[in-house]
Length: 422
Image 1 (cartoon, rainbow, N blue to C red):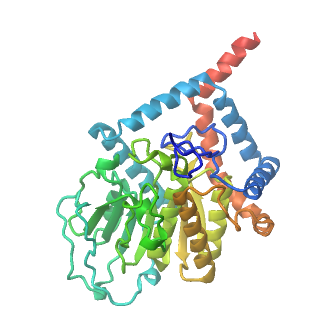
Image 2: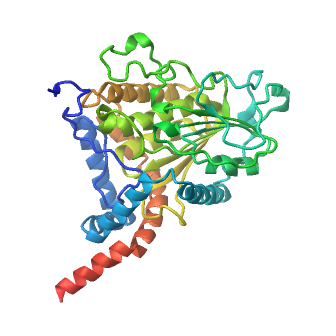
Image 3: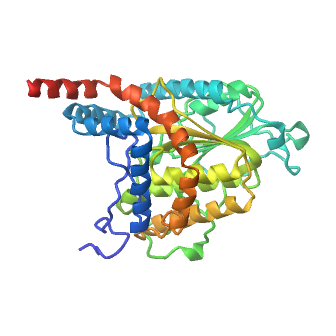
């Protein structure tokens, strides 16, 4: 008999839903397990956007239209089936090529690889990989780790989190052929994707295969902090990957994978665990003045709003961008923050919040205690900058609106509605 009172039990009460890698753009808003105060802020800001942004109101109507469509259900069932077969080489190559095109267009519009020299000054370091793991793989041709590179050469350094199948790395090295590349990706044996081979003739690279969400040491916890009864007690890793390295550019785009092999106790918490793992690792490894490129979902979501607010307070520039050629009907979009001051007080407060949320999700605590997300003061601060947040959101919403209008399942729903009316 399972103990339903345990937060680790798969039958434990939990109101959260985990977003799939093939997210339905018309689905109800995903929010993590949260307090009533957090949820109230989320609903209040959404209502404000509906009243003040015609673009968001139009998008909300389209999402609702698609949500009621049987054709949409069929469309996303096919997408989920494809996601389950993603380890197939042909599928991997398609995703690899598609993401390369997306990143090329992102660089064309926002110049993410135009890294300034101000973000590349740091204390002398020898650039040798410090990774000690049997799961280190070199999924590229013509690669060597170059321990002889010294700071006098000032190599540009890039960290790619959840990097498979490698599209971002491929484009980055095309623009920055002498850059040093490090990446982390979920092992194939756990349901992760293969990193496809590419040619990097002058770059040095190391790809660490690991479950990013299990680096408890990186997130500020020790073995003594882990309850012995935790189902994953023996799986936590207290090493800090690529410790001592600082990166000019950090990119993350990880989503919870339907192929990921993990315990049932993690299912409803995994989206929160993964998102905060990426945020912590990214900010802690970024050079002062560096660039962060992140993929987020639903610009109107309170969690995303809080991230936009936090980044705007510690960065010289924050912009949003959504590709028009792929993922148009989905809610995902890019946030690009340049000139990030990761050592300032506000950055440290953001890290504290993300660490707390990671731990609460990992420990199965609910609802999440989030004094920032649930406070009236935070809501007032967001409203003081709501015009900027609305404009950031509209950069993504207008692209999604255009894509949804052209979607077959929307047209099918409208045709069915017209037939019924007749």
